[in-house]
Image (cartoon, rainbow, N blue to C red; front, top):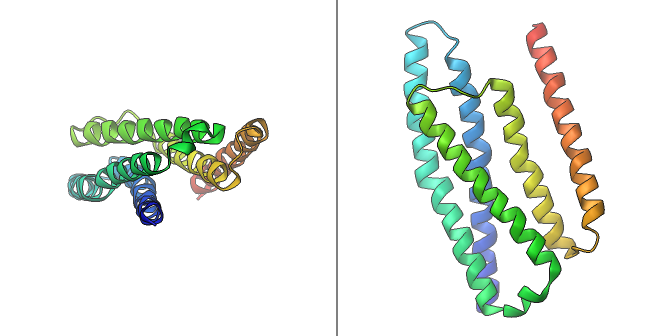
Length: 178
């Protein structure tokens, strides 16, 4: 029974963490685009984006990530038989990738706060899609519990990635056309 409560907490904080990751990169995109505005709009917008980004990051995204990790570790402790399942190892690899994604986002946020804008708007839009791809991979692994069919999963993720990247390029084309 305890396992089910911990799993529910895990799912709730996965949703919170993913919402934070999706939203932070959208904020980065708008923050980056604000740099093309004339003064004083540029400064006003940048200051507001920095406040919103910090609050989202330190109040929602980062604590949620730690709750996800704690609940996941607790589930593995309560049900050690999970360690014998190959799909879990693949899932944990994607989770490590998502944690790395989290810390790259943190680095981007800190750079922008210092006035360093290394990423273009289009690069950030593509970066935003990486979290979606990792989320899809994790959900399919958890639901299907199959690491044996990982080749089909990888092919599907690659195709999905190409579709998303194409959609971003089409969006950019129509946006610039205006």
